[in-house]
Length: 523
Ligand code: KIV
Ligand code: ZN
Image (cartoon, rainbow, N blue to C red; front, top):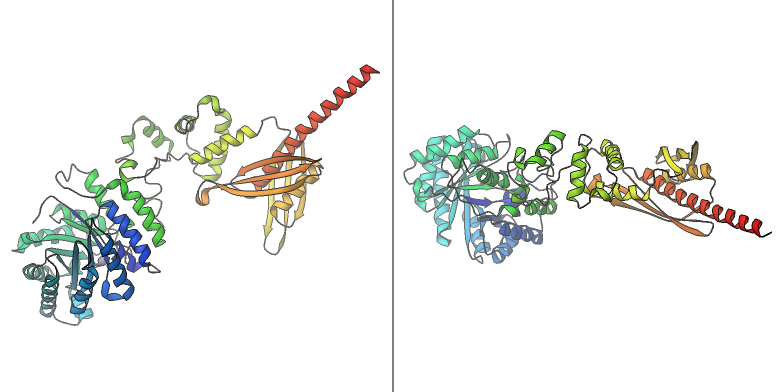
């Protein structure tokens, strides 16, 4: 029955969930199920109903709610499991009972402590029992990857004869390599006489990092259902990452010209993000398809290539998997052209900023942060507008020492006009110490009446923005500082205030001079 349609069987809620440190609530599972339905998975395995009342309830809730994907429930090859699966699933518009038994010698002898013929009979009985409840029965030969091929062929033939419409061949322990696993599928097609009556499915684990490659090799040999999870979560090293399988089949259409899939690939990214958040399983930044860096180009050569033609370094578009923007992350290796281009994309023309100054600030920030994001560039541009190159006060140097149980101390070097001044002070924290050192340098009697700190950007890469309001001589001044280090941002905010005060002082002095000249002229 090898047609051109490849079915995607998602087991995030069963094989994926069983590996989580804390099991999900019914509500969380439903949230994931709805996302999987929106993604367009053909079948979603919602859980293992007999395993706990909580699992039963979530499978039932999902079965009742999901309309556009078939809902499956897992059952060992024992009556009570199959009956529980049916009870939980029967409310679904379309459901599948998925029953399984181990077939490898290691499992049959050590885990089941039976002989193979007994196991074969149990598998057949399980399929028949499930068939009393539904026409849609899937049978899995657990540890098929390590099952002697003659026995695997016998089991598959018997399960199909008993009425299984889908036969799943799991590489339960992620042991095989692609040529070997593809070979198993090929042998089944060559040797099992009734193989055309079933869809052959594969379910590969990632212990050797080969789950996706093995699944693809199986599809090349005629498998038409691939099982796996989003982000590859699952037992031990995880399951086959479905987003990778789908994007391989789509991106390499030249190798798989007639295969059809139902999955809505632009939903991949947000489904991945949701599952990562709900399951508290971060996605590694360099993960294929859905990692934060999957569509980021860091080196100057790559960025230059991308600006000339996207297909120089991108084999699929970020939009095709729903990644919101192409983050051309800038680094200290990025040239002025890349910075200018990014500003253009963000909607700023050359008249809006000074490219030389922005680039100089960008390089300093890139050296500290590694990657400079869009919001950093915008922040640099706006902050640059607040500061004048000819500001009287400039922060030259700042060093702080603080920690639990020690008195915080700061030493500061400020440029004040042509002069360089240094001071050190202690305080009840690093910001307090830095502020006291600055006060010593300037002698201004300033009172900080408001101090606010916020993150500019996302995650731990965010810049710290400090906003302060200070009073001096009955006047209020606002200062803002932005830096990767919040103590530095605080010092910059105070320096910003000092420059306001200095300007206000100059104006006041000028006014006084004019007044004095006037008075002198009148006398
Ligand atoms: O890995 C495995 O063999 C399984 C089966 C239950 C399908 O998860
Ligand atoms: Zn599994």
